[in-house]
Amino acid sequence: MIMINEIAKNIEKHLKALREFTSTCGNGVTRFPFTKEAKMAVQYLEDEMKKIGLKTRIDESGAIIGRLEGKEKRTIIIGSHYDSVKYGGEFDGIAGIVCGLEVARLLKEKDFSSKYSVEIIGTNDEEGARFKSGFFSSKAMLGQLKVSDLEAFKDSDNISIYDAMKEYGLNPDRIYEAKRNLEDIKAFLEIHIEQGPVLEKHGKDIGIVDTIVGMKRYMVGIQGRADHAGTTPMDMRIDAVEVATKVISNIGDIARTYKNAVATVGSITVFPNEINTIAQNVSFSIDIRSTKQEAVNFIYEKIKERIENITSKYNSKYSITSTLSINPVDMNEGLKEKIEKSCIERKFLYEHINSGAGHDSLPMAEAVDTAMIFVPSKAGRSHCKEEFTSYEHLAKAALVALDAIVNI
Image (cartoon, rainbow, N blue to C red; front, side, top):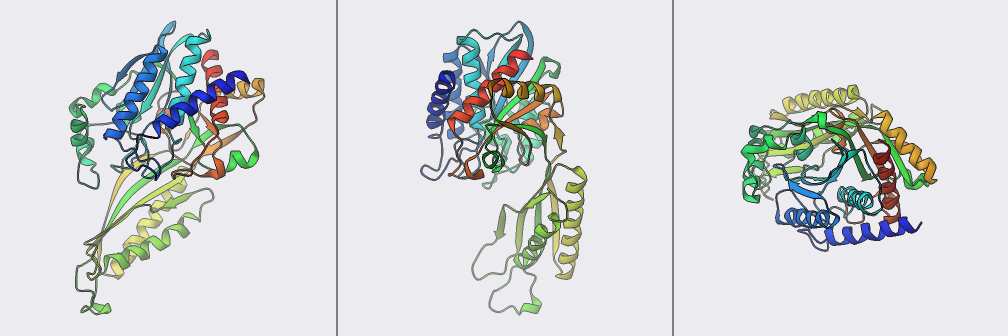
């Protein structure tokens, strides 16, 4: 209990410091990639890594990496993301990095030994909140990013990832340097808040993730015609908002045809967005998720079919652009067993659970042995300023991760 209290206090200290690096003070945490807030968070994390005695570097994706050399070159990575959604919480992603700091501190100070080297990684742009992309650092580590990708994705101010990286002080033309030799990665572990109500409702300390949902994301454009709102008869309009809303109102019912599948429209933009002008264009996002890939594919095809029918009926045009496509992945059985063994030995209450949210572990699990440790979210709240997870639960997750590392 003494060790849990010590770890919990350190985690609380770090998280309260890091929550100040936001562009929306008093209204949650907004820490978009390649911004001054991101740079301040990275600097804080790097300083803390150095205090522990880790060798630090920042890769070309903007990930902050702290390394503790072990007996072997092969590396166990503990990672999560330091970026946030707009008006988000102070635990999402960043809590996993802070837990990693505590794991590294314990390895250094408490004379725990690991056969393998250990790296604590704070990844960049996992959320995709600014550029509607996501998993940026993890994709870069896997060699899945090209310069053309950096030029293609742009934010609401029409700034590309490429230009944002240059302004931030990174060289986008060298993004390939972030690629890791996958043979050197022994395992990838991620501690994360559940972002749902299950663990708290069941009275558990730890969730052992079995499967992470697959997801597809799209941007849909509906083209109408801008006309005067008062002088254009209803039967002579091509109203992009009317067409888009008829499409959007169908999406929830389509998703409900599959159990445990979800579909969300979370972003809508109207042009010219004037009170007395019929909309010329509407763009909106679609996010589809399920642990079954066939469900994701089915829902997309049905939504596309509905878009085709509705736009044809109203004499409008449409475009669909894929922005993300990742299959569901299972976590590594051997790592899950080590996490479960730790929970049993420490008498932590746990259960197996699936993740409905995407995480850096999703792309990583396609390439290396990966496991996720969930901790309860108060009332299941996340991606909002009310987000909260107890520091004691985070401390327990750090100890479980420590046990897993020592026993790998």
